[in-house]
Length: 194
Image (cartoon, rainbow, N blue to C red; front, side):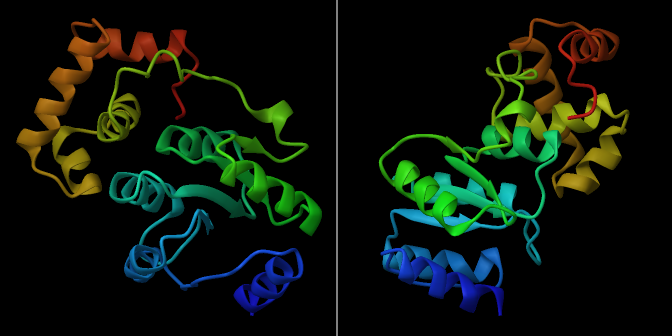
């Protein structure tokens, strides 16, 4: 029902809806076939969340821009979305004119953050974690939360050896030497809760 309403709103505002899907995984073949300029994604999707879907989409189709349309806009959600490569962010509480403005800005190659969200966005740790890949950021986040290698491997569906490799690369890229320094680094940059 929400997708039907969105299709109507977008059409009324001059946009062509070339495809729609109820989850991220089934959207990938549709996106590959239709080559849309902008993809609207929710953060909370069945099977694969919007941040993970954004990472996969931007890796598969760099020219396609992703805009989040979600009921959620916590600091963590915004930080994760920007780090994943999202080009725009708007909530479901915004009106259709704001949505249209956002889509047009993103299609034009700009970054767009809906009004009212600007005050909440901080560059918290963005510069500090800049050298890390998306997967290394995932491992960093779980390391800082105190998870063991086995727990991180289970959470990310990777091997323990891969976790150890990521840990070594994280320490090297951030010029750190131990887990204690890693946690101190996170505290210093206000990214303990990423």
